[in-house]
Length: 281
Ligand code: COA
Image (tube, rainbow, N blue to C red):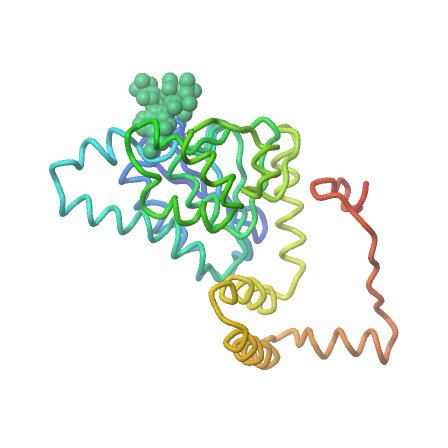
């Protein structure tokens, strides 16, 4: 991979994988990397061929966080440039991803540090290698978990976990990240790509319109009161019945009630053990 391309995009069917591509710097996020991620994600969101977006790093690591040299030190005396790039960095790592029209998955291997928690927690799903290494290291650099890191961490896990890891800066592995809720589940490192591909395939089997509405609803209701949520969900529910070209609601009910051609099967399965597409395998 070329040093001059801090972001790469690979495609497999409807899945686009956006790669933070500075492996020699453990994918630390430089201004150029931020600009590249922002542009790539914006383009993929409106690309009709793309149904699901995966975010990963090159060379066996997710990201070592903000580039301490290029993002922090080099911009110390350039407030205008610093503000402009901070906006870009926050846009793609939070606002764009959080509101993304398509399902997104973070694929975590190696290091996931500091500022990388923003894209980790903005994506809809996160799957990590068992042996991946996480750290909210900011406290050790004399800075806060800034931008929106403190906010998104505090919103994502129990307060004791958020305080413990933010105040101590201790590293923890993928299994601990799953236990406290930073990622959905972990798998052995050698299975990570396959498991992420399986999750992407399962998401792409859903109606895109319905899936988008469900994920938006799950996010939006968090900050609403009960009356607002009921009203919003009613309107959203009506909207997807009008919008859904697959008519998922009518088709599904007709298959179950009239044609008896479809019956859901419920069987317990363990997250991360979807080998061969067989839940519970
Ligand atoms: N900013 C700038 N450069 C970074 C970086 C960062 N966040 N993380 C790694 N690098 C650079 C190193 O300076 C080194 O550059 P060099 O080859 O020019 O000397 C290169 O990437 C490789 O890093 P190295 O420390 O040798 O790799 P490692 O595999 O032994 O350790 C880390 C990887 C991620 C554990 C370690 O680099 C680290 O702790 N980085 C800082 C992470 C951090 O705290 N980020 C949050 C910032 S708020």
